[in-house]
Amino acid sequence: MSNYIDIIPILLEGLDITITVLIGSAIFGYLIAFLAGFGRLSKNFIIRNFTTVYIEIFRGTSLVVQLFWFFYVLPGLLGFELSAYLIGVIVIGMNYGAYMSEVVRGSVLAVSSGQTEAATALNMSRFQRMRFVILPQAIRMMLPEFGNYLIQMLKATSLVSIISLSDITYVGLLYRDANISEGVAVFTMLLVMYFIIALPLIGLTRWLERWASKGVATE
Image (cartoon, rainbow, N blue to C red; front, top):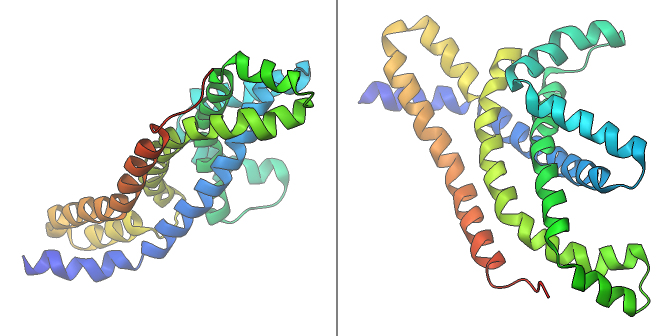
């Protein structure tokens, strides 16, 4: 049991990377979700199709492959390198942003057309209808799914270890490589640490589900 406890300080060395990548990815991912979600709803042919291509590429390819491609291939194409941290945040954000954009699009479309008609009858502009009538209801519907994707993003942060970011998985694997007999203890403690980090996110998601279920005007 003592070797399990001894591993905790080692894994904690990577905790700041895990947490900061999660926060950065979540902020960037939610921003991308709204941009791409509204892009898919755009009446502009170019914007709508450009957004669709982005979504299908990021949903249709592996996150691991995306991380490798952005880390090893993209610098050669651009002529300059981004830090591993930025690549981790950007790729995880864009990957989950693609999935969440469909949540945004679906929630906006789920708002009853009667709401739009009523706002139009009040002489509201298209922007005002979206800002004051549709979006507040749509966001309430998005929140539970956004909470679930936040937990998914936490689990995805373990993949940044493959681009040499020293998160808790990375430092755990380094320790395991140097102490092969400690493999079971390392992965057990990694399991426990990810669960502990996820606990407040799980609580937040359940609270959002209860709050969102209190009622959304649909007629």
